Image 1: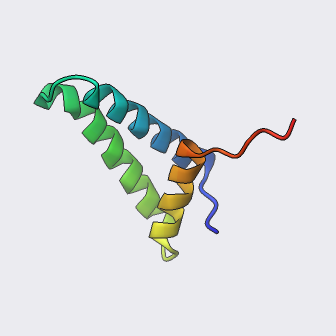
Image 2: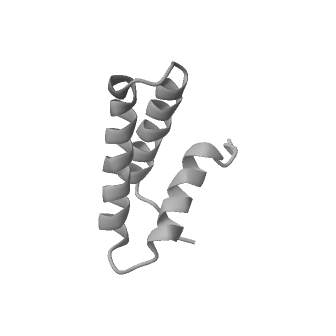
Length: 74
């Protein structure tokens, strides 16, 4: 499985948080702009980090780390 960098996970987390904020209110272009910007940054970073590798697997690994984190084994 692809291993996303911490930077990529942070960008994914920012996009998810921006989505939650945008969709919690009625649609407006200004209200959705931060989500679209954050998503674009995340997608661009996935492409850059994947290089010639499996872009889809890297994107899914980052989303899994944000949306379904492994329990802390402390």
